[in-house]
Amino acid sequence: MNQTTSNSWISYSKISVAPALRLFCLPYAGGNAALFNSWPAALPKRVQVCAVELPGRRRRFGETAYSSMPPLAHDLAMVLEQYVDLPYAVFGISLGALIGFEVAHEMKKLGHPPIRLFVANCRAPHLPDQDPPAHALPDRDLLARIRDFGATPDAVIQHDELMKMMLPTIRADFKLAETYRYLPKRPFTFPITAFLGSEDPTLTFAHLKPWREHTRGPYRLEVLRGNHYLVDTGRDALLQAISAELNCYLHARSATGQI
Image 1 (cartoon, one colour):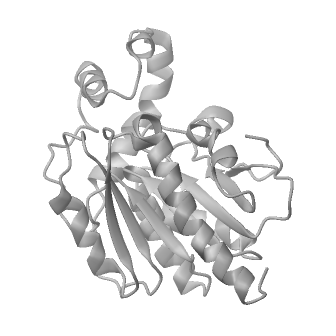
Image 2 (image 1 turned 180 degrees about the horizontal axis):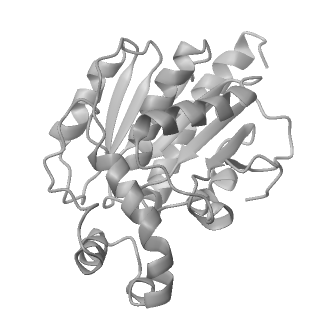
């Protein structure tokens, strides 16, 4: 993905036509903006992919990762407010979906809500997390939990120096997710689309169906083949589904002369 902004939070793609819509993308715990490098080529040509680079990774490695949701949601909303010259949607997977949900509420307070929220492999925000917390585990046990999730190659996990550098950020991400507490909010009016990986051992249909309660607008839940990390294992089907919904929005705006 081309770096075209000095803003350390956002990596966005150059596209050959004027963008009509932005898609802000948030990674799972331990992930970074590079997860979305291949997305611009697979989405509608007038959609600009804006991958969020959270502190504590890649070019922001020297910064302390957030371990509490309220300050992260507030600070990220302040960043996104700089991009409201165009309509935008938000995509988040796992922890990224919770972040996206809270940021969307912050943006709604500012008078600039997204046109749609996409969430993947994340329980509805008001459902309690039944999994035992991992963020305070000793390093060895935390590494074992990371290995069980299956997103990090063994070669990386076995690289002691690399993992020693990465663990503080991963631990902060786990704490961010595990200490999250939902506070009742007025439902959105824009659509929510949820995706569930059919081979995700940590979630079921019952975990994602209640996202319906968080919007008065349209809601859709789609099951795709893949595990917890749909951006990797179910990438093509996920991008096709997102593209279809964004294309509908763009065509509707074009028909009314808005683009």
